[in-house]
Image 1 (cartoon, one colour):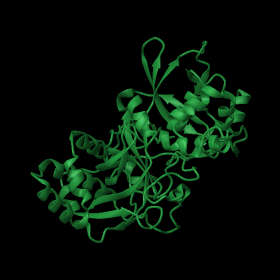
Image 2: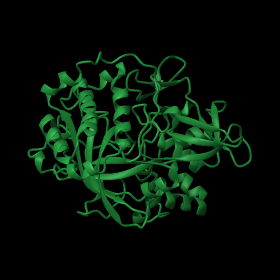
Image 3: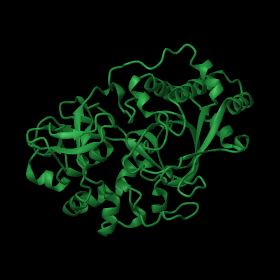
Image 4: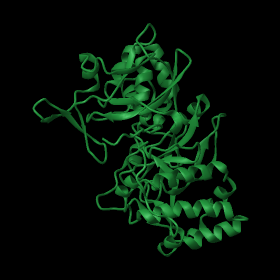
Length: 417
């Protein structure tokens, strides 16, 4: 199995899960519409007919910073891995074109003297595409996520009695994609895995614990996030990342709590879920068990924390999570939406970003997740973020690719992240 570290895979949106009856958005669209699957044979992207009319380019140029360059370099590092060839072509974009687009965009940001020169070069050298969104009109729901930190212990003790488990030997996954296939029996046949509740109740994973969390909710959040930074009792720091999961279906905790009337539809957030846990542990735990999927973990070097699904670090306000089954990985995107502020109102969020992550609830062209960073402030903002907007992709015109890649020797075999 190719080890993958799915850090920051959409914590907030995975907990909330596209399951509310309705949320407040500019067009008051029922949220289930945002998760409309891409029709068979359709492309999630369409060319923008008049990209020169995109005023969002001007605003995003004004918001550029050094972190944009850092995020670009992480995508380039990913493209330089030989294993990334398997994900292309995607949406008729080749691996060479996708990589060259990031390199050319990074260099253009650094070399352009002003907005006019940047805009002119960008539109002359790049083709611009837009996500078809949930309605074929480009409407995308932008939620947000962050990187959580929890207290933990290397051994079971009072106050730390909920384990995270290592990958079991009988977990069978697809050799290339890592998708779960089932559980291998002694005779070599493959059966479905038990549900989350059955695994917890049976003790079948006893002896494979790698760390102990303070409570089942903390462990559950790490499950849906795919990784975490852990503060250990001895003062050290431990990083755990995704090592596989069972083949059972995922279900939204937020939706389960609303259906059980433990939360109101309009108040679902990570903070509200934690308050519900304090009020009624048992009922929230029953709701968690509606999500039958179970995740396994491994300890890893924190040098790449927080890492996205590409295996490289994600950057606050510069990395985005989309459905990697339909969108090209690692590329340059322009997000045009609104972001919530600490005061509760919203402000314009128009940024160049990079498509570097995915998430359990991000499964359609009408959904995307903004990475907002680590710590309690990021968690607070991420829990409130739900706004419509538009998502654009920038790829070099085919006749520009060769010149950018002229001195590139091609992907090479690198150590796995």
